[in-house]
Length: 207
Image (cartoon, one colour):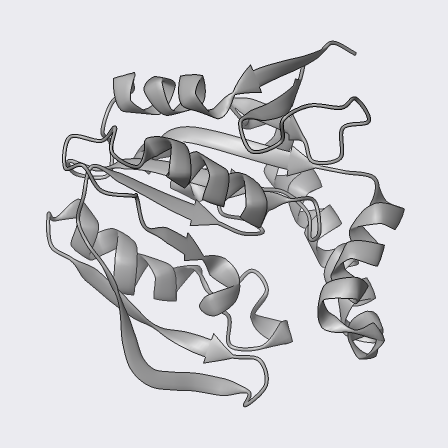
């Protein structure tokens, strides 16, 4: 397997050079299994894009975990994302969604605005699903070894989530196999590279 380190700055230029397919917005999906490093990758790409976009703003990052109505909504949240975020932005209007509180187990009343700007990043499991393909400028799949992904999630959320997390891992594994997400991705990223590098500036591409 070929492993290459590439810069987030170069990837930002690639995004901006790509076609806008969600109306006038370039939609980037950062997908991959739980604990692979999607959130960090999405944040670093957004930082690289900040000030480089035509509207000179840091692109908004929508985390699909914020749209899930609990553990049982792992893959069925998409209608909510489409209605509240993608459809308005596709039409050139700002979107807005209510963030789910995993502590309170309900959606919070305050709306989170999503401006219709030149780039939008959606991060989370199934973000690059086949159904989104027509809207995507770039599909990224972030991966890492399963034991590391499990330990990361437990370190972040505590051991009490293990029963649900194990079920989640089974569901996402089946989804990725059926959907062919990794094979369709424009970019596959190693979320746990062994070689030392400046992680804030470079990511590890697999291919």
